[in-house]
Image (cartoon, rainbow, N blue to C red; front, top):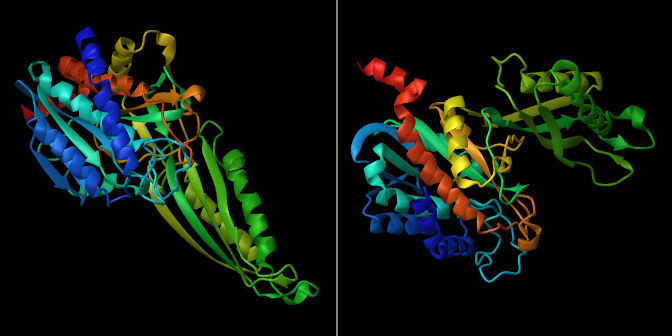
Length: 407
């Protein structure tokens, strides 16, 4: 292990250089042409063949010294449509686009990990599939799955991580079970009948109806869904009307429903289906019509217990104190959930919040930045996590079941 940590230290300047280069030239989802080119060039220098997938995604294989299972390591690539406000030498040079979620660091960490894993091929009893995924911010994972990223060769397990400004530097978050929320995005159009605010009886007021909707749907979280199942309904946008003395014809509202459990019409809780029922009922009561559009963006991210144990074992080697290893869950969402829904996997949180480094701003903030030394820990988690997987693969129940089916 110590030789791996020393090697990461030797490659630190290269790690920072890659991350800062990517930070200066951020690209939106499915537009990551330059980013993909940087990745391909680096991997080819390592002697790996690369494959483009799903427009700008990049896939490569590290073949081990012996046959065995296939482990997928994933990093996301895309940036956000935001103007960067950081005063740094490597500030975004693409106006209106910024790496405000750490994906530049994710790519850099996996590239350096790939270099070390290529050097450690003799310890790999199987295959590592490196996946650089586009458009994570708008659910790009499912498109890669539909294009066959989990096949040829078939993936048996998956590992991923997210640099995390909600956790202080020097800590890591690992937990089994649900760790990130499912996400449904809604748009509601409440249609009434406009008129004069001095004669409201001659109108049908969509404003009062919308206000009732906003308040009433909150009861789902405490009266219809168990408090043990985290559910958050938030309205982020309300628009309508032209003047204070005019009752508008309609009000538009947008927001999100987040849930830390299996959602959908077949689930016991059915948060979105209940939400629709209440909205329609309130609109009927107010004599308004309504149009409801739901976009099912992400399903909950659920970590496999055995894969989480392997990640915990790796973290014990990387972090000097077990007190640095925390149980962490979040109602943010991540399309890595599409991978863990299909194969056993684990997704971890790498703390990067450090006020002295200016890295304690929330993700998706115009001043978001990272505490760059924490990337060394991210590289170590990729490398040691992968090697630990192959060392213990034969003991994993899902690998045993796979081998029995093949026999």
